[in-house]
Length: 329
Image (cartoon, rainbow, N blue to C red; front, side, top):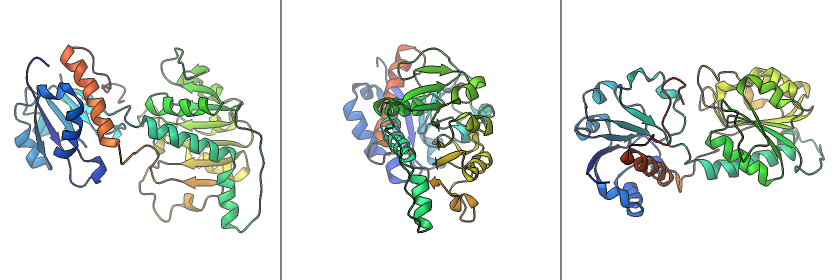
């Protein structure tokens, strides 16, 4: 960067250690990036420190929604990066000043999501939700199937998480159908569908993997009609957000056998309450929102996304992971 740019990093102490953007984590990232020499960086660990540290900063990197009254006082602020992919907790974006861009860390989760997706598809194929239920019931209940290669998965939502899922599925020999707003072709998908054609995308498929972000438009997008379009005995995975899938319709189809199993990693309320009936639902495996976080690499990959955006920012180009104010993702 030709000129020194002020950036401030706020790391909230309530976050787990592997998700903190403190001086030590920054030092590791900066040592890998020549662009870091053009930054004057300050740090804080609470909102009080943020207000002092943000003075004259153009860039803020933070882990949750910053106080609107604090950022409104900073006329030089041009860009806020949130160190997470899902931004539903920030909506609506009426707190974001005009002229200030918002980015997330989309891309940081790709490798871990790819591995999780491969595991989840394999678990559905080998009937692990059914076998877990049978084990609880002390029942010897074998189910056999052919190879997973040649089967079809419909990936609903085709951003970073969806593409990582498709990458895993392709590696296992599955055919991939993708649902996203942009219907143009993609190297990781055999067929592309728009959201209004989600049922068509699921007709005859073996599995659904949902990776959707949560917005008003995606709430309950994956529901009864999509489940019913699958082959009998199909399987479902949700690693997007809980409310984008109709869990009542899912449970009904697990009970009546239309679906053979499901793996859920996300819920409307987290942690999932101990008295929630989903805990005892047959042919269902519950994951505690762990599909994409990599404690060994999460923050460093997040900083890699930041430096990709910084290159664009310094060149006057559109930021790579900018959130659309209208769409909310």
